[in-house]
Length: 489
Image (cartoon, one colour):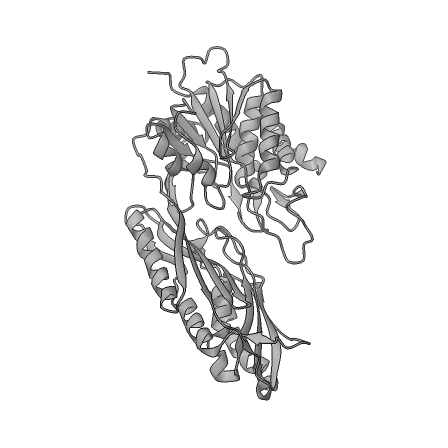
């Protein structure tokens, strides 16, 4: 781990972040980081609990003179999104994140950084370890599996926490205070088909869509970024009519909450079109690149002739319905909020497409701050894929977090922010990401909740980076908040 990270200010924060990033922590494989957090709490001599789903709770008493303040829950999630560039050799299951300083930014070498939500976890760790920071009684809640289903928050039972205020440290703009978020639901379409032999007189090609920015499928969905799965479908759409194109396999995207950056397809075409195929397809490629020249300047679409022609392909009738279902399925912003300016209300990310060996899977994540709108879009997707014969499953549904404009802790944070920033007001917002507050509120409905954090850009992509100057501003803000928690009633 680079010593330059540990030398950054505030050292308490960056050293704990470096410690955490040395521990592999993919979603649904959090055994090592759970053990790491339990060991951390026990070494400090604090009550440390692992609940039945794997969440870790560490309880620290109030410092002297703060005993009459309300107990607070400081909460962040342990897992991180694992994305890497194709040319990066890295094993997330065994390696720690390799970080470096780039001007005002901390970055990772070809992978996601884990600042989402590692900086929140590191903040709480630093406060738990400190013997000089004044604070009320703290219940540190470290949840698991936030990024792929929020099963940690869903599995947290009532009665484990006594805190009256929850500070969620999982937002990514240091001038924003979040008081609400979107809910989500996983939409998965699957089908099986009988492969057929590749027709005689065929040649094989590999088509690659790459160079897209990717990003967070909630926070970045409004930016008009390219979706590799939708772009690939455009390339394949009229392929059979024009070139006798049949699909052998597709592998596009990875995680539901990451806008897909890459897609690779293996196809066959009739050999009589061999010379014309790449030339004629270039017109479509140029059209797509022109559309995305501003938002995706590094987009690449590559055609490579295969040395070995695929032996099996998708039947033409199944392919006909598949590419049309993909075209029909909505991707991106579905509806903007009528209540909050510039807030996406409802969206969908066609996150992962896998086709081959007689099986098809399309995985989507639909988000909305309005439950009925979330189900409306999910049913639109269901309809598109059922019409082609897919089975469609809804799973992992979680609620949004309804804003409370009269929150007591909101008043505290806005006042402190203005004081620290020469009268500048923070943006009080609801976000289109999925925060755990809404889920936690189902079992702790009386808890006053707020969310904030340091500036992080490019989350869920290898371009993820954390601002050093923002981390300093945020750390100062956290310390002020701890000193100003309201007294018990």
